[in-house]
Length: 151
Image (cartoon, rainbow, N blue to C red; front, side, top):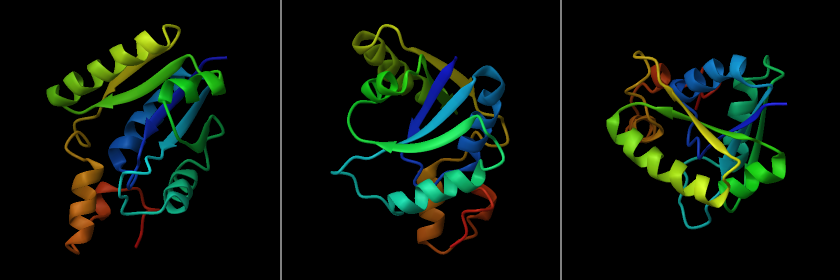
């Protein structure tokens, strides 16, 4: 069974995340959308809210589950029997950042492979931080997030 973990904070989940996850579905038997929790990080939305949004977004897709975790992503992957980490790339800066993380993860867990998917052009400019900024300033955030993310 080919299991991938798609880790992130998803604060909030965006259409860019949805694009990458949806395109990963045919590649894997199971995708675990994993919300990493960092006690020193300040989130705009609660863990419960983020779990609910992701679950509702993918409730039609039996291959996708959502969980939260603390600690190293590689340990979470090993605990779940995952062989792959799925990541999306929007631009060259993402590539450099993600490449370093993938290489560190490979050093920690050589059996894990990181799979990169380029985001589709229509979502490549979207990030959670942009969505949060628009929400914070009471702008129209709806073109950036799934329909279930309604405040």
